[in-house]
Amino acid sequence: MNKADLTEVLAERAGIPKVRAAHYINILTTTIQDALVQEEKVTISDFGTFTVSKRRGFKGHNPKNGDAMQVPERRIPVFRAGKALKKGLND
Image (cartoon, rainbow, N blue to C red):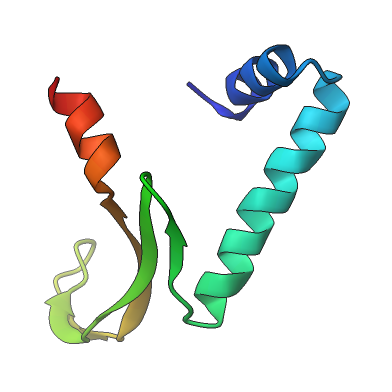
């Protein structure tokens, strides 16, 4: 399922136009993204929690020429499924 599919399902289930459903989805995703950029935790009850994790830097190799290089530390988004989502997947 992609964003367009999600928009269609939301519009149908909520009885709203697709344009409004797409707008709501954009608000939700932007709000989650903004919170994660600020390194805030986002918890949606019974669904899951979005957090930011830090990956430490390491020494790697350039695959094109084999030269050693330093890969910098970076932040990555992490999602942990909530209890209800886990139960729904395993029923």
